[in-house]
Amino acid sequence: MSPEMTSEPPTAGAQHEPRLDRLLRELVERRPIAALACLDEQGAPAVSMVSYAIDPATADLLIHVSALAAHTRQMAADGRVGLMVLGADGEAESPQALPRVSLGAQASFVEPGGEETAHCQRIYLARHPQAERMTQLPDFRFVRLQVQSVRQVQGFGAARSVEAVRWRELFTRLPGAS
Image 1 (cartoon, rainbow, N blue to C red):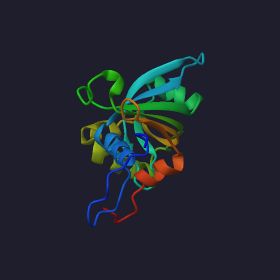
Image 2 (image 1 turned 45 degrees about the vertical axis):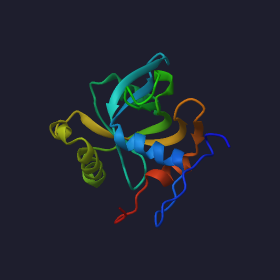
Image 3 (image 1 turned 90 degrees about the vertical axis):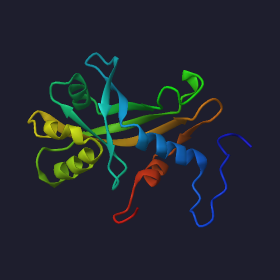
Image 4 (image 1 turned 180 degrees about the vertical axis):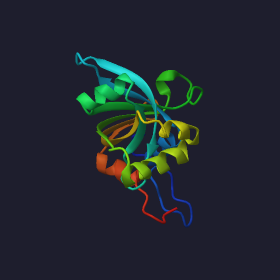
């Protein structure tokens, strides 16, 4: 059986979750920072760092960006972005074996004010309470990143593509769900 197909037996009374699904969820929920790749004004790749949160209603990633940041202008010009969430140093014997997920997403800016901004702010601040002051600054906005493609690597020989619909199943939490 390939490493992609291995799974752990369910524990009594627990709902079974495939091993790689569980590891993907744990990585994304544990690591609050991602590398964000955009296209610059000349169409060349440009990479920056962003903090993110996950909207449990949609499984979109939420980022909070300043109008002064190059990546904000780049996303406004072309909403196609890439993100990489990487496991911490020491989680694997070599850097090439670090757990990671690469995401392709479509960025859309949330209009300032209103219920959607308040919704994004609640979710984002629950994960990043230290950002409260920045959410009050007039040049900052929330951006939704709707995941379109997923490539998970859990180490040597354990890599897979995940359908966007599966991403949403893994990260969408119904109201009242634990």
